[in-house]
Length: 235
Image (cartoon, rainbow, N blue to C red; front, side):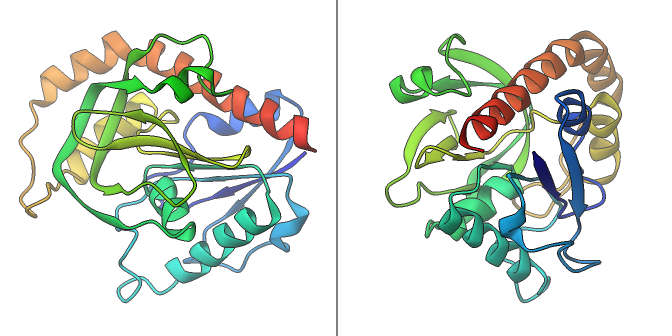
């Protein structure tokens, strides 16, 4: 398959997902809409993965290129191209499908539990997983549930995952994240919902990363592989 990685922000790239894509034998291309045009028509891709970013999904006026990303994701939905949206990418996918994006009641930072719905327990991305498990969060915005979407997971704060049809998923957490990226975000990008930098105990975070990142990455690789298998089934 030919897979596209949509990169919204240099500080929030595809993480460990590219190695999963290449290990599965697929071709991967990258697109950063703030810097370059789309490499080829969106219809020539067999799957699309849209990643996070420091901007918010409704900041078109400040970041006009977000409209290009939004248009591409709408094309993916119209053409039923298998699509996975992560954090900002999930919010953009929700927006492309007609949902609202907004500031969350509170920011979610660090590892936190989410709970799968009954539909989530049966979904190809999560089948066989426990109903409740922990994921790495780094967001202050949230998405609403798009019309006709199926809710797959939620946390105490916000919706965490939805599916549109049988081939598009929006996630709020970061399954792709690596240990160095977690520490970089904590040093350089820790802004809360009120615009005030959140307080982070860096030694404590470094210890948590050393203790937990292997399991987080294993779960992330599994999720990416499941998405690719779902895309392979369609192509």
